Length: 336
Image (cartoon, rainbow, N blue to C red; front, side, top):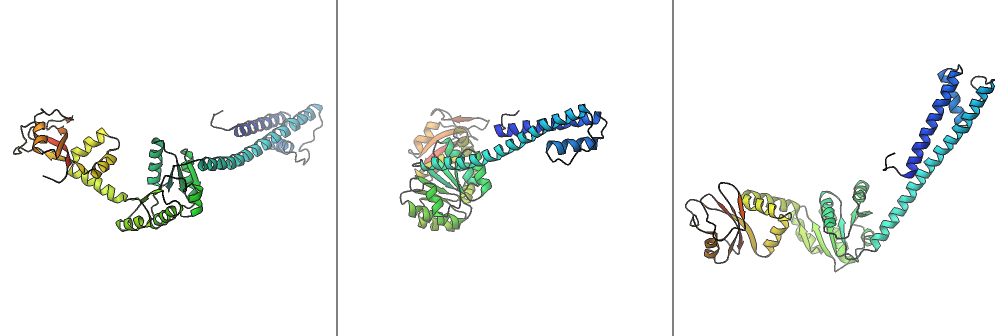
């Protein structure tokens, strides 16, 4: 019996199997006594289920009467077993649903300095898994039953309800939460949730998703600390892949959070760039250390992509640059 079955399910399967075996065995007995298969199965069914329509064929021999008594005992017992197992299964499922909901609500009530994710769509799902990897407690809110069921299967604390409802936000512990991320695909909903969350907890950090650039200002005015435009981020990433393919490739290899690192570098006034070393370049046949010295500290060589293949990460200052090589540099300030 598979371990995935609960005890009531296993009992129901055993009971059903027992009844089927009893019905088959006693039908074969009547068949041996000269009954047709139709009469035999009919007799077994009405006897096991205690219908009592009467004997299909007169039972006048002691052996056949004894056989029928056995059918009554085993058949009725099996049906009672099936009925009891079915009731137990249904009752336990209801109890577990009620207790599970209360237990989850109790766990949510104990949270403090946690995160609230409004929406369990594509972005909300990825965000939840990353927060779990970062060991941060959080609650998922969504109005769609199928998405809430999916989040619960993933092992997350959930609340089924519309995040625009202040009662739902209160139930998620918005007053005790550290951060709220509203990542619904509808800008109007994100603005409303931001307003509600800011009103319920003035100190909470709010990160909101926006679909169109014009919504960014509205979300900030509503109280969002940061606004994320997924389409804009995607466009920036594609442009970076086109303009600086080697820098992006190296960054992705060196860090699983390459996009996050690029964002932090930008905030510090730094950026990664790729510089091709042409045949007429003043840096051809010169050393990596010369590049950094000539730039006056504005460039730091992160890697050298060699023309013949291969990448020297964190290259030696004495490494010589050849025509066709590409430098991946960290630049400070404006362009040269």
